[in-house]
Length: 420
Image 1 (cartoon, rainbow, N blue to C red):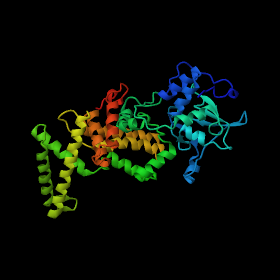
Image 2: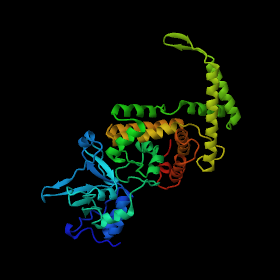
Image 3: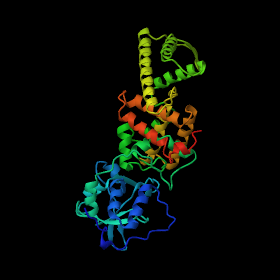
Image 4: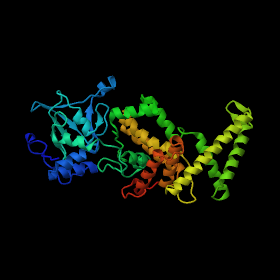
């Protein structure tokens, strides 16, 4: 396939900008370099492999979320209209009155209709700006390229925002707690000013995965995650008992002894006890023996799952030899790091609230985990206990790959931000 310049009818490209311009991400760098060379196939290839964002009407979407609500820009001086598209590094900080939707270059080509403006403008006002003619699918070089190049897919890679992103400090530490999922999804790990999958995509994510449709619901879920109360308390009970045994006996804990200790503690707890409350001394009733034995059996099965995951994690380099997972609170705190950003993308909170939650997530992580590898192991185990059912499928494998990237890439926050 041959490619020419975007269109001779749009005049010369805009000025290249000052030499000191720093591309926010590798995407804008690649676009600027291709544009400077006049290498349009390379430029279109970058566009086809990334997500593009366009302004949408929040009011219209909230009223009709099943429809597309694009905002086109009118040039008052020329009396013409165009459609502005942005890569994720060029988006402004989220505002309540301005929201964006995310799409692929192929979708943009297919979304043409006769009411659309004749021009698209990629990253207007920047050194990687490029106007493109907009017409029926397959009628322009870029739309034909989009047909052949497909659509973006989640890329397992570490991506950072080099302009406007947090790289050091307490906010960056909190952002790094969500880095496993960012690497897995190919999203910017250090962008507190989150747009994510767009306003509509973030609303859909929270609704479908969490049942969140209001600010109050988002606040409740975030509080539970920060308090480490969103996951099963049984997981942490089993692990905390092993921690106690390891501390008392100097390290290694035999699995059989761990199982017996679980049975002893649960049986003792089931016998009833005397507690002091604000109303005075109260005695709790013993639990039925059948209930107690069922609980013991359930926790002992959990111990089997935990030890099998740990064995696999040692084989895959997530855990060092003879090490074990100390806590799964990282699972809640890593999700809290993401929930803080998802809430902003869905406009359930402000940037200040997001940053405050990120700082709290980072601080809480240092109270229950010793290091980034320890945090990672806890997050991965919690994710697998929640989703994987010992299939060792994508819920596990994706995290193994993300862990390896974060423990080896020179730009990784886990190698550049002290855990404590």
